[in-house]
Amino acid sequence: MRVLLLAPQPFYQERGTPIAVRMVLDTLSRTLGLNNNSAPQIDLLVYDEGEEIEIPGVRIIRTPTPKFLRGIRPGISCKKLLCDIFFLCSAFLLLWRARRSQYTVIHAVEEAVFIAWLAKKIFGTPYIYDMDSSLSMQLTEKWWWCAPISPILNLIEGIAVRGSIAVAPVCDSLQAIAIKHGSPHTVMLRDVSLLPTTEAPHTDAATIFGASVSAQHPVLLYVGNLESYQGIDLLLESFSLIINHPSQPQLVIIGGTHTLIERYTLKARQLGCSESVVFLGARPLANLKSYLEQAAILVSPRIRGNNTPMKIYSYLHSGRALVATDLPTHSQVLDNEISVLTPPTAPGFAAGLKRLLDDPELRAQLGAQARLRAEQLYTIPAFETQLCALYQRVQETLCRPPLATPSMRVGGA
Image (cartoon, rainbow, N blue to C red; front, side, top):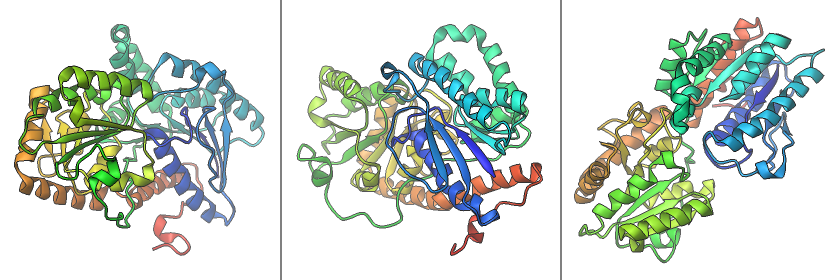
């Protein structure tokens, strides 16, 4: 089986979509080759930035782009759309060179689905739509002037969905959108926890976060990028309302670019809480478990979007209490048994934080329930099973031999 995976993203970088793409590649690399005892043939087309990595059976091809288009941030942007023009040209060059022995299927991530739709019309190659977000919603939330043409954007998105051989949404709300658009077959490919199953080395908060963080006071922890849709303004405003809590909480923020860290450091200073806020910048994913386990409360103040943040699954798996905004981006996964859901306002979010600071027993109860939920539903084996079910469906449709499931692997559990 020859697969062309189109991922218009920097690769590899330790952030949402690139991490998910790597999990797809790791799984396909192990499972596709078992059908005929040969190495899988997977071509991955990505942007011309990111760490160089090697995955067996995967050839990584980078789209040549001008240097001024480097530094693509998460989410939609004018720079990203410009990069997609070069990406489109590279994709069709690959497809043209493979015209005599075409790819079995195209696995298209996010906006690459429109390239895959064109490829199907020209070359007849079927495609899977890896639906990480609603593209029409992204555009209308990012740029207000797209709102009047939202019916057209929805129509285009629907055409891409119906033209696919299968759609793989990452969350319930996207699954509902795919089905509404008339998806021919839908297989949930939910994000999962990235935490290892091994125990993290025992240490204290000051050692993990630095001398500016005291091990004697509760740590409120945010992990992720600092783009506006993540609600960092809301988080800082909420924290400023509880800064005088008797427990003397500290807010630690991991992630973000230097520019955004400077912006939010200034905001924290203006709110009068900068002495209790620590920005650590980007940190290695390998240390995520240690960071999460040193927190008293984890936070996700996201204010826009309908896809669940990938970090939520690791948050749950860590066994720590979680406060999140009560919006579909969270509520399709979270409930009151495993988290505290609050209105997306500073007073509402602050009340949720205060509730957990006041009640250590509730923190422990929510954390234990969250870990149990994550172990049952949101682990890497669950992701592998979902992905294998997706490709098995595709192969059945294409009259191919069935894909080996994780339990059928040589040496598998």
